[in-house]
Length: 105
Image (tube, rainbow, N blue to C red; front, side):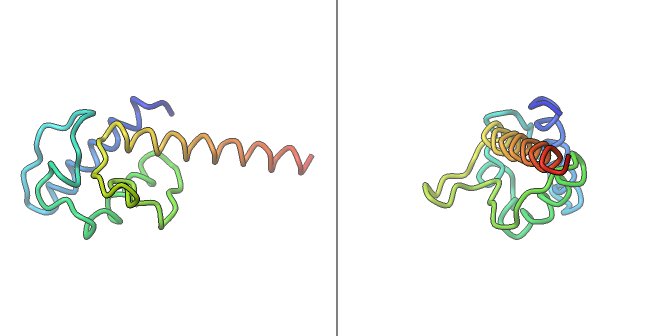
C-alpha cells in the first residue's frame, strides 16, 4: 500500500459517508480538510469513516487516534496530512510485525 492508494481510499470513504448521510460531497483533493470543508463531516461520523478506511486498506487505527483533527493544535487536518498519519501507522505496524516474527524464529 502506498500513499496514493491510501489517499484514494480515504477520498472514497469520505464520499461514501456523505452519500449515506444524504449530503453532497465537495471535490476532494490533498488540501481538503474534511473536518472543515465537508458538510457535517464531524466527530459524530469520524469513527464510522475510520472503521470504513481500516476495512478498506486493512490497517488498524487506534481508537484514540483522531485522524481528521489535531487535538494539540486544534486544527482540522488536510487529506494529505491524514494520509501521512495512516502511512506512519502502517509503517509502524509493519515494522512491529516483522520484529515479532523475527523474535519467534
